[in-house]
Amino acid sequence: MKNLKLITSLALTALLSFTSCQDEIDTENGQNPNTNNATSPTASNLERTSMYDGSFDDFLDGTSCSSILLPVVATVNGSKITIFSQSDYQVALDILGKFTNDNDTVTLQFPLSVRLSNYTEVVVANQGEYDAIIDACNTLESEGKGAISCLDIDFPITILTYSLSLEQTGSVVIETEQQLYAYMNNMDNTELFAVNYPINATLSDSTTVTLTSDLDLQASINDCLGIEDAEDQAENEAANLETILVDGLFKVQSFVNDGVNTANAYAEYSINFANDLSCVAVNTANATAQNVQGTYKVASETDVFLNLTFSGNATFNLLNNNWEVTSFSSSSISLKSTTNAAVTLVLSQI
Image 1 (cartoon, rainbow, N blue to C red):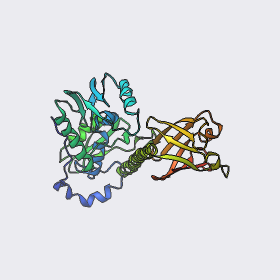
Image 2 (image 1 turned 90 degrees about the vertical axis):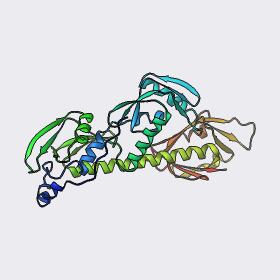
Image 3 (image 1 turned 90 degrees about the horizontal axis):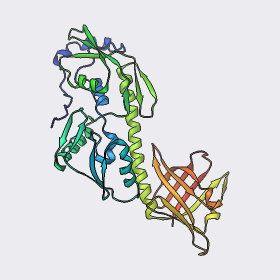
Image 4 (image 1 turned 180 degrees about the vertical axis):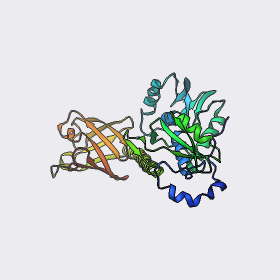
């Protein structure tokens, strides 16, 4: 199995003699040949943004450093399925999403083939070999050397090449991520380069940014990685909220609409959230009153959201909304309407 080539941390001794020139040339966008070498931050940024992104099937393989080449046979929560194409991913996702607080398990059938972050395709014979791939991925990510998937450079771009005498020796047009990865990964320690700015990049929210310097590239990466961290945190909070909902029994403590708190209209009801994304409001004071059926869904972006949908009861229909979760604990969940911030709802655990 081929291992990922890690970027060396050794500085070029020959390059140090040009430090006095560097400060002057660094001020020019894209024309800074003695700034970038195989160990420079820009080399690392370009290599990491161009690594193969295997995160799209993380629900199946549990690692973003590789993806499974289809077809593959897997047992998902006890159900054996064959995934022939990416359209079959939904079958696995439906099984995994059926219940909110169960322990999801995916068992892969070996041998199988994977594509690694360096674009190498390898055959994995058993779980031990697969665990080694996952461990290597975790090590890369913990060292800040994993793939950057929140920013995609728009191709083609041009790389300017220089000699150690700081003379431009040529240029290379890069057409794809794989070409860029190969170029950066195979760069010799005696080579110098500069990106011919401006270039464009697409962020994970589909917005396009124009980058005019290495500093621009670094800043955009820092920003999008910060958003990724916020998304990861929100995803974890959403999972915690699901557990609190399913494990608890709730009442409407406060429902403010147009400045009026109408919580009294719900005082006799308790709301029970099931792990199949259904919920039911039960009148605890009147056993003959009809239960109010509903559904819910917890989602996250950089914030956490709770969608409530009740049917057959005009009072509970007023709670139908996509709510932003402003705070929550095991005893209380505070919500704000995503369409009208003045509409708020607080659920407290009974």
